[in-house]
Figure 1: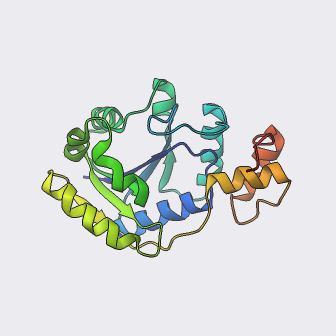
Figure 2: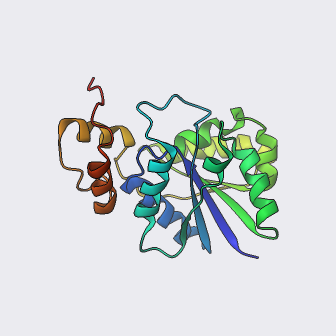
Length: 204
């Protein structure tokens, strides 16, 4: 039985902190593979200046190069519409029966997952795995894990070093004409430049 991680997100664009998180989760949890899955349309937030699904998918593929454990999936993009994790996990169980699924996420997602659509279904289909994104984040995660376990979820917390990089930082750097070194991989930086993405970001 393979242990497979699912790491979904808007990835607008995917950056170094995303890849760092995936690699550390894979290492700590002993995952055979991680599916990196960009959403077609994020259900929980309005994404500012959202690049096309095809561009975000292409950047994910570029960012994942060189690590055989990471596979990029276009399942949610092909499905179109809003992407709900419960539906995605159901489909993955149908496509890849007999595997153990681990839903990988950062602190903010873990703290709100019981307010997602059909949370009980998510709990049945995957182990919830989270890593902190703030100095006292592990404390918050531990408290939330107790709540989620009482609701029937299986949880695993990984103390992964947080890289202070966000998609907003990347988009703002592009708009200002700043270097993307250390924010995204060189291949993703080249793609953003060639496609002219994020040039009209409003600087607050």
